[in-house]
Length: 331
Image 1: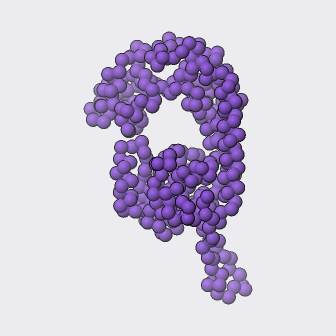
Image 2: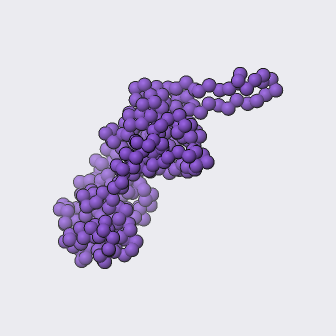
């Protein structure tokens, strides 16, 4: 990325169309954020488009086809590691990254052109920062709710399976949000940080479809935690099947498996005050990184040349045509 040219744009569709004309391999980085770009053939033209979702079994085949054929690869990876970065000639960030580190980590294998979508007011980035590093008041509200919560027999049985210490708390993000008034997405962010996520489900009928049948059998063979219900650590579900989320949604929709709301198991020490100080420190750090990113965006040139206005004094179109803008080099 050392010699890559970096631009900004407020017209994502036009920028993407130009990138697909000028480069053989283009990536659209599309994390899970509000305000997704709606792509249309009228906007970007007839370009081969591939959807790269790492949680699907076909992701390697999709990546290989794009590398061989060329075109546009839409990458939905939420927070890719440096090793997961994909080599390409050009990349468009649909949303401005949260930090310079994130920009460099995702795009360090881009060889020629990087274009960053210029947000009007950075509100989406600020909302994302709030979910990643919630404010201390919200954390205090959720921790207060957890400290006063008395677990049910079901919750006690699930906590015992995973070796919870005395003083533990078990809840769903929905219950925490309703009890505290804290936004659901923020409650989920807090509970993911301080707790262990547990998937709970009850097998009902064995399906005929091969992939879903294997997932059903694996769930069925697990000893029941409470009555007929099975409980799994969320992280361990990846060992069952790479595509388990999609298959579980299908199984739940057809009644093969009854999926309950995910639980969060929180130890007593995680409910205490010191976590508030760590969260506040993280929040200040992310706010500073976002300010640096905002400053960097101001130094970038626009990727799309400005369209000159025709005036009576204009002598020839050639004399008023805009040149391709100069670019900043990504740090």
